[in-house]
Image 1 (tube, rainbow, N blue to C red):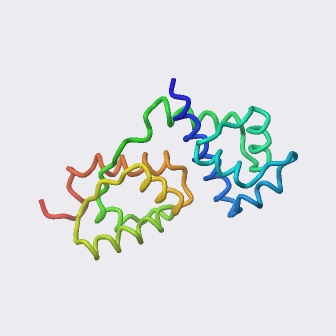
Image 2 (image 1 turned 120 degrees about the horizontal axis):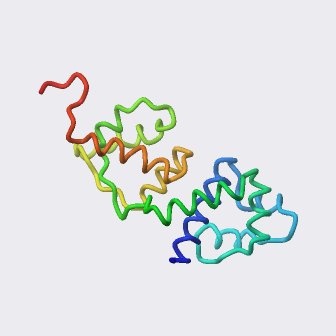
Image 3 (image 1 turned 90 degrees about the vertical axis):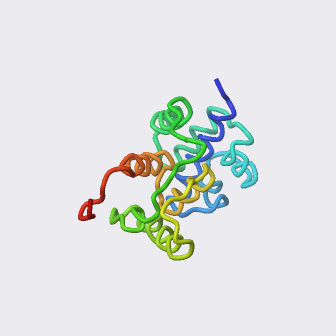
Length: 162
């Protein structure tokens, strides 16, 4: 078992929940029943420090998140290798994607295609995490969506000439 991978995945999920509420770390810390510094919270979110079970429950309560669901997402990310080293993304397809939750990613992809004229790009985990945060999605969900799209790279586009 890779404890560091669990800490990083938990940190990503805590940060995602905080950002979804549009809270700063200081704002989240004020919601907790016991004292915690914003710096300590940052170390939880980066996975450089582990938190106690009691602190975890406090954070879940403040973020209105189910501890069970949060741990399940973290476990899935680590055990089921939901986080690849890189993922090939078809920028042209993403720029044309009309799913509302991907609007920020669509804008980014459109700009990348215009700037580089590249059809596809390999995104590393840090880039996928940033793109997921931009979209307000859990990283694992964005990866699932992009993986489905990547699996269709070899399939013809609707309306394209064969």
